[in-house]
Image 1 (cartoon, rainbow, N blue to C red):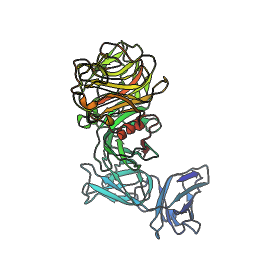
Image 2: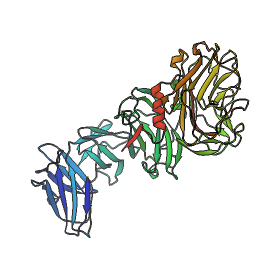
Image 3: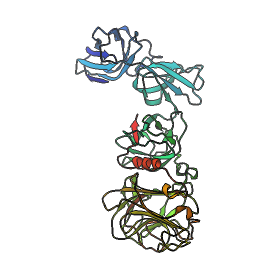
Image 4: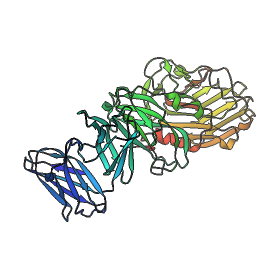
Length: 531
């Protein structure tokens, strides 16, 4: 759709229409409608603002006063139509040109709020001939035969009132489809497509109960349209099932936000699935809830975003609320792949301590983190509940980057040497030897078989050497503290940046891990915005 130009008080609007094949659209009824036209209260459009296109699909509206207009066009033989909005007629120029393609129409089904005036109320699209009375509606009203495209607004008024309100700003209508406007208390909405096809995240299998990361910036979102801290945002499936979400960061000044949304199923090899975000409700109360996103039912036991910039506590977003304590010079915030993260500058003194929590016992376990290394030459503990050293019944577990730069996971319930019964470890086949890039490290331990235990780097299975038999490891437990960045004896500490540590009592699938990486990396390959 396009429009340009202007006119004096004797100006003209020149309209050119084509059909879906690009051929001229003759015998098409066209109406030039004032931009703020109310089709119920403003009476019929004058004959001087109506006409029919010629054999070349053209029509000229003459002697048009300056102002804002829209062209409504309908071709009766096919039922195709269009609305060309945003036509500006100026005093300084003679002609305004407008062109568009006729398409099959769609419809808009609108949910009515409690207390709507169903006796005298009506909905309409300003600057068009489209309206519908609320009389006899049962919670919904449908605007029929709406041209495909993005219409400006949906307005509400009543025949016994001069007050008009916006139900929704900007609604996209697809040809031969019905757009649904849920939650009319929210003035704005936009859709995010979850693309798992080869052109997106390239994940073949479906993943359930998955936390999708939504990034908002000044390029894809107008922060002035929402409340100051995002209190009014909501997320829903196409059938209006509301989705739990957690705001990790909302910075309206810097125009940056990261929001986690729990989606019950992300379908594999699909580029049509969508979730809708709502905002623009000055009275909405905050509903951000990390426990609803990172819940025990989804396997999560702890999720530390590590985004704090002050204070001494590292919040756990999971249902368990296992708050950590920053030690040494932490928090030391820097920008990571998912917003703020922590930079550990002083090994052995900078770390995060959660206390005596999260003994694995006999359960499966998955552990993940984003890291960017800053030193080499020693083993470096990332996530631990151990004093390290030789295996024993009180060894616990350790996720580290070993002396030879391989990501490595160890756990033990007995034994004295790695490879013994009661001891299991798995390393990556690929090393991490750079200090410039972020890497997503993830280990999944399935206690049923060594072959089901995997080590991933950046979403790819990089499983290498294993020692011991995971089925012979019994109860992995001790009274030591769960720590990020060091062991309990402060040895083999990590130096570098760390972000988004997750700990779960379940063995995550390869599809889960790849989807996490493809969604969380920059640029995001999963989430595509469409409003």
